[in-house]
Structures are given as structure tokens and as C-alpha cells.
Length: 157
Image (cartoon, rainbow, N blue to C red; front, side):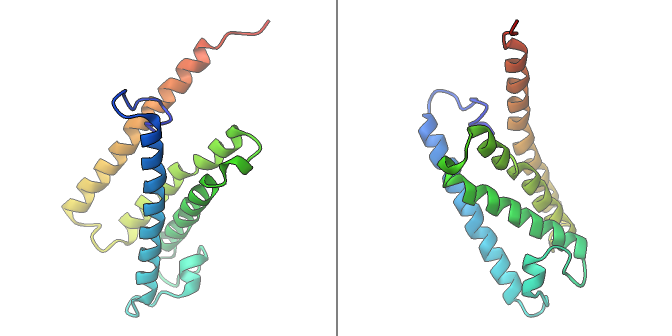
């Protein structure tokens, strides 16, 4: 969001931010994959493949699992559609798909809060608040820039 809002300053070049962004997306997919594999492999949890990949298939805490599954699909769509960006007809279509990362992040946070074993600890709550703040700050910059550009756009007669 900071990169797209052009609020990254002048010290680091846009290519550096883009590489960081792509790298973090890949790392997020890797850690999500590790999370899914370890949750499935833990026999004490009793998680089936359907629970991992089908929304609403969990026998218990179904809503919390569903948020996680939907967050995973949102993340996968965003990451895997970022690589073949040139296949999209317009940049606007690619951006619309890429914005799916915002609700996917929200769903992942809700999933962690509802189902996480550490959700009741003060440390989890502090990290969750910091994560929300880290997203809301650049999101506010982005929205402000979009509104400002809309107001500055010349009207056609």
C-alpha cells in the first residue's frame, strides 16, 4: 500500500520496494503452506484435507476454519496472479484482483483471533493491533491520494 501510494520516500528506489513486495508475497505463501501442512500433520487436531481446502467443512469451529480457508484462497489468488501480470487485459483488472489482499488479510486476522492458541495472550493482542495499524496507515495514505487525484482531475466538457 505504501508503494502504490507513492509514500516510500526518495532514499529507496521503486524497484527495491517492488522486489521487497514480491519477496514478502512469496514468503507469505511459503509460511501459509507450512502452517497448512503442520496443522494437517498434527493428528491431535483431527484436521482433514477437506477442512484445509473446503470452506465450511470443519466439524468444529467451522466459522473460524472457513475464514482461514478463504484467507488462503485470497492470498493464493493475489500471489499467483501477480506473476503473470501481463496476461490481464488491463492494469485496472490486475489491481482489482490485487486488492483482494486486503480482505484476505482481515480474514486471516479473524481466523487467528478465533482459532489461535495464543489469541488470549496480551502479546497476541499487541501484535494484532500493530498489524492492523501497519495496514491502516498506508491504506489511509492510498485512499487520500485516490480522493485527491479524483478531485484534481479535469472535467471534460
